[in-house]
Image (cartoon, rainbow, N blue to C red; front, side, top):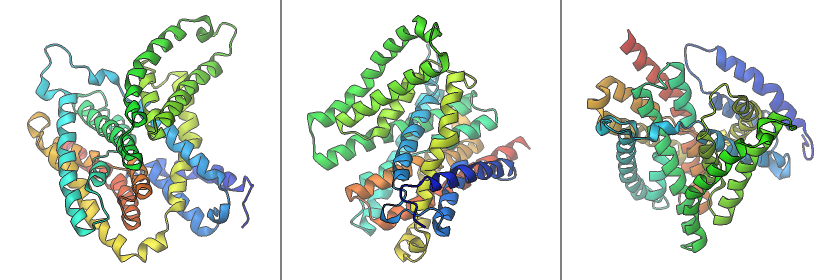
Amino acid sequence: MDWEGSLSPLFWVLLLVFPVQAIVTRIRWIRIPSILAYIFLGMFLQSSGLLELQDGHAAWLHGMSSLGLFYLMFLSGLEIDLDLLRIRKGANLLRHPVVLGLLAFGGSAGLSYLLGLRMQQIDPSIHAWMMMLILSTTSLGIVMPVLREFGMIRSPYGQTLLTAAFIADLITMLLLSVVSGFYRAGFSWRQASVGLLLPLIVICYQAFVRLRRTRAWRGDGVPEPSFKLQAVFAVLGLYGILTDLTGAEPILGAFLAGLLLAGFRMQEHHPVRQQLEGIGYGFIIPIFFLMVGAQFNLQAFLASPRALEWVPLLLGAAFVVKVLPMAGLFRALGVRMALAGGFLLSSRMTLVVVAASIGIRLGVIPPSLEDALIVVAMLTSLLSPLIFTLGHRTKSA
């Protein structure tokens, strides 16, 4: 079909995303992440010929997909509870969520690098540092909904897992953005200027505090919802421009913009937050995951013995690098809960897809490994919440 210059692919997306989400929501005996369902939907649309991506057809969807990823990173930053990072006076440091999260990430990064060295021995085209970044990631977008579903989001245990996921996402995103820039162009002051993005958060925060005190923000003479949304999008655009100027990955700027706005503690039922999430999760973000599925060539993957060989090795590594470090925290969390938390933190999706695409662009991983990583990301997104749920129910019983 000739979809070039046509909105027909978008119509199919709008038509099918809702029933897919409705079906996933009603399946209660197994937790299937919505993002996984969107990927399968993309694979179906591509294989059925309803979504043709070759020869420039529907090329604008790639732009929508990039926007979806950018917006997803923004909402991920917005989900962070900055109170979790505060170390209060008199607190037991060995049981503080930040300390436990750092220990878990440090152990995970160390194991990931060792496994990356082993993979480099198997295939010299693989760079160990890239595998360390890929395997160290955690899907904050899966960890948070699961913890919220079990009512554990504010418990010390839930805070520990949430902080560990946040630290893993933030550090790997920073390193991925900076190291990839250094790898492409070498050291330059432009690349080093990415460090200015963090103190800029403080400046923007103070500016936003003053803006909230103005009559315009309070709605005097201005349509309040649209004005506040425009202010939020202005911050998002500012950080996107700044990361582009530094040569860093735009997703870093989006995440930091969300982190900035997280400082204002917009609760779940805040009107602006509901509007932001409605725009993202209801429309823009599904397009990103749908395009991931549409671009995944299942037939080529099944026909590639090398890619198939990587799947069990990567799947085992994905669980080992998270479960073992968490098991080492059994004194603070308990054996069962430490292991269950390790399996939940093993879920990966967004950053793995992003890191794999960056790795291909830099030439530090082979294409067969990228396909295998996408499959492993889908498997962990399905298995990790299920294993955590079973472990939690067993404990409750």
